[in-house]
Length: 108
Image 1 (cartoon, rainbow, N blue to C red):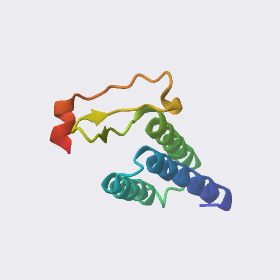
Image 2 (tube, rainbow, N blue to C red):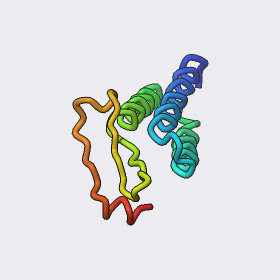
Image 3 (cartoon, rainbow, N blue to C red):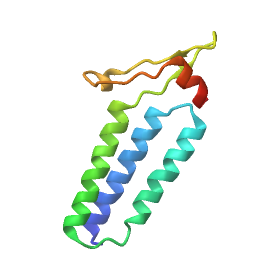
Image 4 (tube, rainbow, N blue to C red):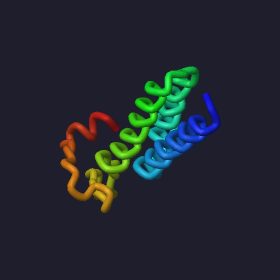
C-alpha cells in the first residue's frame, strides 16, 4: 500500500475511532468492544492492493464514521432507574429509532 493510501486508511481509521469515542463516551465496555471491532475490520483488509477495492473500503469507513456519529445515541441510566436518550446537534434530522425501556433493560 502506497504512502498516500496508507495515510488515507489511517485517517479513516482514526475518524471511526473518534466517532465511537464520542458516541460511547463513559461506556467502557462499548468503547473497548467497538475499538476492537474497528481494528479487526481494518486488519482484515490490510493486504488489499486493488485501488478500486481500497477506495470502496475507505468509502465504507467514512460512511461508518458518519453513521456512528449521526444515527447512534447512547441511552444513559438515570438515578430513578429509567433511561434517557439525549440526541445532540449531530443527530438533527436523523430518523432515530428509540428502543423501549424493556429492550434497554434486557440489554443492560
